[in-house]
Length: 434
Image 1 (cartoon, one colour):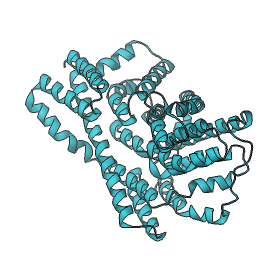
Image 2: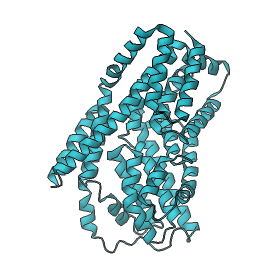
Image 3: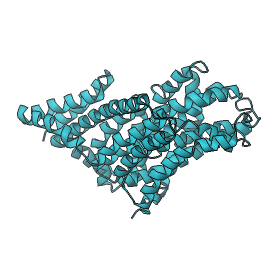
Image 4: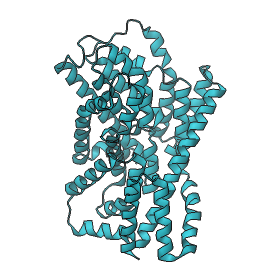
């Protein structure tokens, strides 16, 4: 073991990240050189040659391309197009109904997507223009959609949760079940924010009900049947135990393809774009995963993981103090790093600590995804905010969007505190699977 070398490697990694070296390249380079210095060139080449296959040739990880394909086919095939209109019709008499409809639509889109960026971009294009035309303050409308997008990574299928389950060697299905509760809790907290603003600030949300006079209620409701069937197929199979989370990905992808064919929306362009986006996204995720596995091995060989775990145990941090430190770490990292990178850089260090403290890894998986998604709307590099700025730049500046997410960030912190104080919020549904 060489703890000093491990700590130097950790420091160099953060320097490289600060210099905006791609996170996968930074982790692979630090790990390769570190193992080379410790054990020699042969073992370093061996780690570099074997890790990609060992990581990617995982049965559980095969769910990632399948769920991605399901989401891209559903989106490009138009299965999700009617979600916002359906929510508008259902909430037409509720104060702030248009904003609430956007959050409900985000939750529905999340059920077939798994990406907060895709959720924010897709619903932002549809909902923000309508909200602004209805009299919503542009900063609030854009902030609501930036925050609503974060639900995309909480409600299964969540790509972040799959990667976490593989890396932490815990049940992806259980993490999915826990994510449902926190995703719905998050959506409810956003709805409460919108209701309060509609009640207290008529200058931000107009008092008039949602205008849906131009919509044919019957046609709107019929338009969403394919996505409801797809959601029922995936979640019904998961809840009933008919298939695992990994198998659910394949069933969902096949179901999405079948539904797009049945509705007459399948074309070569839809299929090509869906497959291409799936391949590009998988490649970027998997190379980061390979780097994280190599970095984990480097930290293990150097003894840094054991050192940090021992230091935490020796410091006698109680549960709440440890959670405070972890929340602080992820909120700070979320300001500067994208979620996959932040999660995979920190898990090699934190997992031994969590195991030593006997913290449930299913609960922590959902908890850390929630923290990472908060980072998607925090300045200066909240990625959802930049996405919303790109799709709705004519309505609000970047500063306006950041102002608009402030109340939703406050709601997120309430959710985080509740999850820490009441772990059963996450663990109740997974306990039903036993």
